[in-house]
Length: 74
Image (cartoon, rainbow, N blue to C red; front, side, top):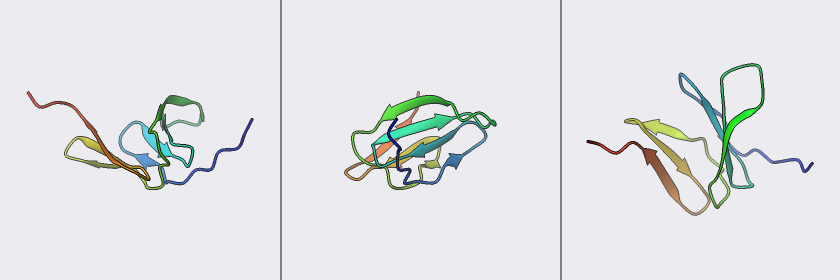
């Protein structure tokens, strides 16, 4: 199994935590003693910075793009 280089700090809100890496994957973990990811999303480019939450939107900065993930307003 290849070792992954993690390049960002984990963002922990109330639940869950997210962490990106040089391989372009963003892993989402439950806040628990288990290290098994709940989900892994391919961002298409390296994630070097810590994800940020503002106004119910998750912002993820990759090497090439700024991605905003949030619910549509009614």
